[in-house]
Image (cartoon, rainbow, N blue to C red; front, side, top):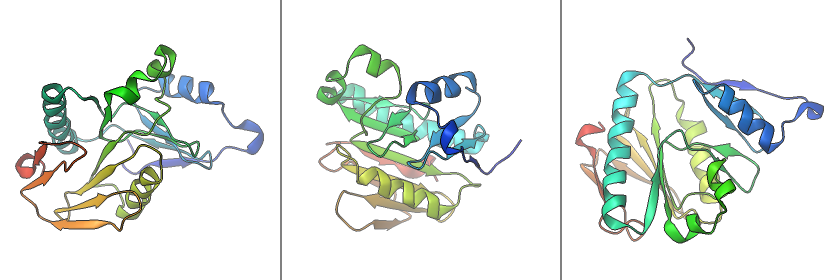
Amino acid sequence: MFTSPIFLQMPDNLQMTDEQFFEFCQVNRDYRIERNKNGEISIMSPTGGTTGYRGGNIFGQVWVWSEQDGTGICFDSSTGFKLSTGADRSPDASWMKLERWNSLTQQQQDKFVPLCPDFIIELRSSSDRLKPLKEKMQEYMREPGARVGWLIDRQERKVYIYRPGMEEECLDNPDTISGESVLPGFVLNMSKVW
């Protein structure tokens, strides 16, 4: 079993359509598969127990807040989003305003969501390199609809905060992180994330 993502490049004449890529992901459900804007496919094995536990805790906290707040919906790490660049991404946890979600047809909701979430969280696992994750976060922030993103680096105990058109902000070993005006009232407790 591999720990670092494998990157596959497709010849130009073998590029998958969106429908074909969706089907490719469905028949390979044991892997987390993403496609960048250049059509390169990255295949990642399932996470280990520690990362899965920490990621589940993050998702759980966002989900509980989302259910209580009621203004949007929360997505787990298996949800694919089709970005305007053509990339297909799956953040570890994300949230989208209800009116944006409701603007989609049932077919759009059932496939990879053709909108970028308003809020994105990526959790760095022990095998992840930081630079590609930072590049992915910057990619999200160039998308229409993206309002804030957090890259949580457990190894260094840092949280990188991304906002469209702004410089990256870095928090060292925070106890909590505020959802700001994007997720009003949401505070991520970091005690079970670190």
